Length: 72
Ligand SMILES: [Zn+2]
Ligand SMILES: [Zn+2]
Image 1: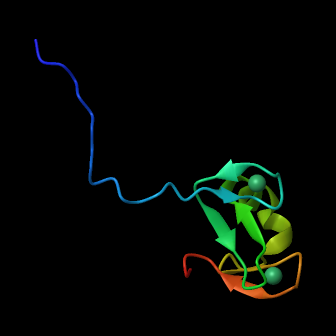
Image 2: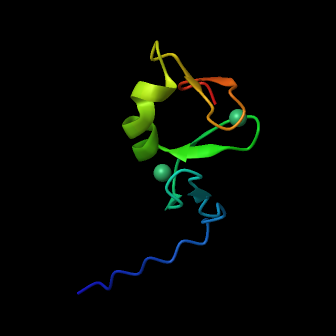
């Protein structure tokens, strides 16, 4: 019986967890604005109706700047 040894030495990357400014949760992915505002995928989905009018860009509630989807 082989033991499941999961020792990865090549795990250089630190887990980049980000803090959602909207719900306060720590998430793996956030939409970011140049002003430093970040919002998680869940919050973005919930607030999408109020933050985007075309599905291509979203408006930052902090600075009002326009940010593109998928163009980080
Ligand atoms: Zn959130
Ligand atoms: Zn902003």
